[in-house]
Length: 528
Ligand SMILES: NC(=O)c1ccc[n+]([C@@H]2O[C@H](COP(=O)([O-])OP(=O)(O)OC[C@H]3O[C@@H](n4cnc5c(N)ncnc54)[C@H](O)[C@@H]3O)[C@@H](O)[C@H]2O)c1
Image (cartoon, rainbow, N blue to C red; front, side, top):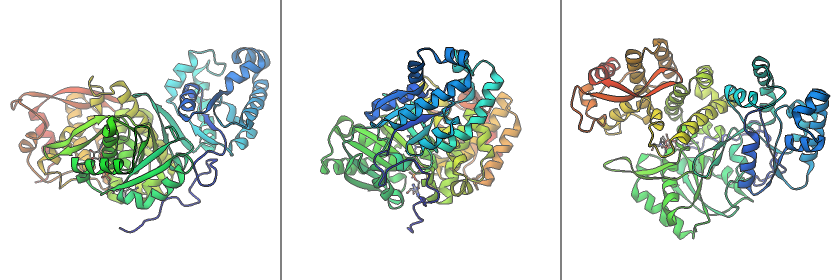
């Protein structure tokens, strides 16, 4: 396979304030973002995980002025507050011991602060505007009294956050909790943001991703962890087998991996699921960190802790829940994906946007073709990836072990997709292609059962056509496919529960659908 380049051309790689050779941040890790984003909480957790001290700029200002920010703001006015803020922030950034620092929402309005941030690793904590408003207006914040001006201020500041911090960071509230870093340069920043004890690691790498991005990974980890050894995973679902898991586990043993060490996965969903399963079971569980390199893995499979391998009897039949200690999703790595893998991932992006609705649905509709996005507007792509990540994290944190039904919403379009894959022996359609078809079936049913506006399906069909995803299929007739929809002992003519949509963002997880309606929706997109 030809090397397509690393995707890390110098002009594209943002300046992240990393020392040469990766590894350590030259200075502090600084969290920026609007009020109500949760920067202080995230900062405290991250500092603990990185083994660094934590400083909250707002708390330091209050200490300095001897009263609450609200009180000072009220008495002295905004200009005086900004002056104090700049003074405190610049002092914090100059402290010799590198820390995690969270800044107040307006700190980046100061040019001096923005300039000073250049030598540090800044990360942007994004938040849904409505959530930010709810949090901030409930507190005594002086700039959160009027909704309209609050939203306007946020819009005005967004470009500032994005200009100082190309990376986005979120905290996954699952298991013990872990950081998720998304954005161009996330790979390079991993050493500086290493979320495990600075010990030793074993790398499990997709064969193609290793050739394309393995060196960049090693450079990033230099100084953070000692690499004990590595093993490559052959491309393809076949690698998700018990035999392959045994080979990996024995490679870990041969390299002398111990309980305190970390497994690192570089690759798509196949490598992630396999490496995670090995991490979950090796010596009853070791930590693992993911570097997803495909669209599917960056927007979906790297989050939520489902790991496992397939049996001849079924996909993902053996596995474990094992949350990673951190995820670094770098869209620069997507630039080396072949077009058909980009397309396959697009189906999952559209699925996630339909589940989320609102801002993510708008962003996905506005995104240029994926091929253009990966080689051009990385900021917009990173924002979409991050939106998908936040959606998935919100769902899995509400239903970590897939027991309450909340997580089932992620199966939008998947009943038909699995049936088609199973009926055609997993050979004819890529998973993403099957998901695209499944989504069209689910949307058709949603119109019928829940009154979904037909323009949504029309738009989704256009989004698929643009990415050369199928919008019809030739294959087994509906009754044959129905045999593969996991009907168990249900008889023909009975109702079944499917995930459907009332509108983007309004998912009905257990919509009752009759077999005949499902058959009709399938036949509509079947062409002979
Ligand atoms: N754990 C979960 O929650 C979850 C969720 C969804 C899917 N999955 C699993 O994910 C798997 C599918 O994952 P996938 O779609 O990422 O496929 P994949 O891992 O098979 O990767 C697709 C192809 O892309 C190549 N590749 C990977 N990164 C590359 C890069 N940067 N440049 C060039 N080529 C690259 C790989 O070698 C492979 O040929 C399935 O096994 C599915 O069951 C798991």
